[in-house]
Image 1 (cartoon, rainbow, N blue to C red):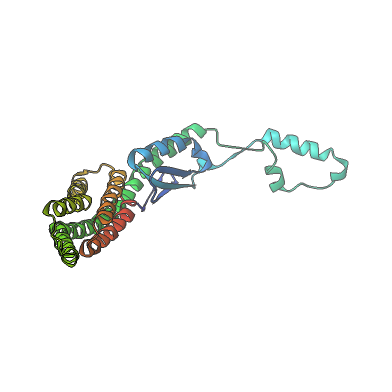
Image 2 (image 1 turned 45 degrees about the vertical axis):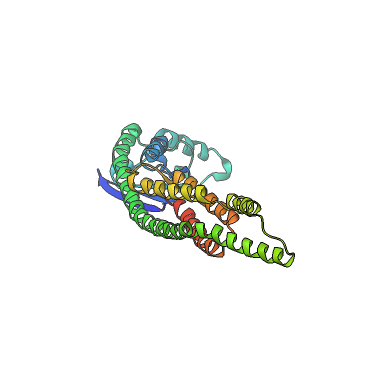
Length: 290
């Protein structure tokens, strides 16, 4: 499921900003982009994301704008003096003054602040609460989207149940229609041949047809799947159910295909086509349900 959350705060002259973007994925995958000074937080942030967001492609972007004096790098005057002394000894550079930017870019001239560990802990204390707040935003957006998806799924479940009820009511008539057609056909053929129909043979043929086209078990299982689907939607209590719903929708489609293959009746076939269409729409939607 998709989601977006962001949070920011200003503490001790530094502005901290974090945003989280979530795209649908069956599994958990994270990308964490942090400023260099807090790269050590990546593993902790990923674990917190796993605790809050069970699945999805998660991208975290964090920025720190520190305008305080503690953010300034220190100039290593000894190293700078040594560089200048060596430059003056080079005959080709005699009388020339090297640029300040070139000097400051030399290795070892600029040193990070000496209180790097303290600055890391300060940034950590600011970023982690912002991460939780941004996660709250992602989850709130996911929840709103989830309610819309669940409503659409329930509409399709209701359509399936309605069409399945029509299939259930039609099923007994299929065998009765076949019995009547078979009996009339045989009687016509035997009458032309001046023979009488054997009741036992007719009964055996009808029984064999009824066995081949019996869809009672498939109807029962499909109805049970519908009930279980609704129970999962109503009783998840925040637990991930997406994979279970995906599996259940596959089983529903399997039963619908079996009914379609076993029943030659046109009315039942039309209803099954609609049932399969609704199941396909459900399968698409449950991919977005956690």
